Image 1 (cartoon, rainbow, N blue to C red):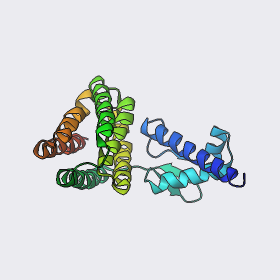
Image 2 (image 1 turned 180 degrees about the vertical axis):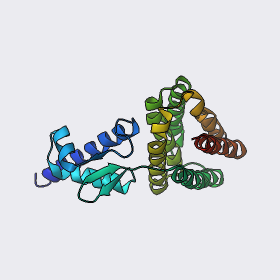
Image 3 (image 1 turned 180 degrees about the horizontal axis):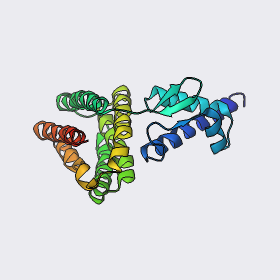
Length: 221
């Protein structure tokens, strides 16, 4: 098939990007870590082209930055950057729930809510047990599926990108946190309940609590 080579390369490109993103979010590639295309290609035993494309993709998402003549570096975010992310996240999430209150969810949302509730329960358990890496995976899926209830993929993707950047900042600090469980927000299930009941006031209160929790934690760094 004429296009099979391109499909294979694009699939490999995505697999490499996903693998590296997971390494960053797990803290195994801490902020400031530098590497070259060649190093990553040798690590995964693949050619340089899909690696370069994957690294460019991650740079566009704000996880990496290009270092002139040296390769790529895991981006280092400051507390001020994190505050800016929280502000952007707040505006987006507030808009999502305002739209849900005004227009309701998209057709077929009942099944989606079942999945969102499952993610919420797993995220709550991980937060309460202090399982940071597990929490990140479920938390990202939770918010992605929850934002998907408005039926606008641009909104969902933009929020997902900001949430990944928030975790990139937070992970190194949380890994040194002596009271990790206290630093993790665990009210995902309550939020799903409020959305299911179309309780706009409770939803706003929970989202406010969520963002305040992040800002209070960052203020102590």
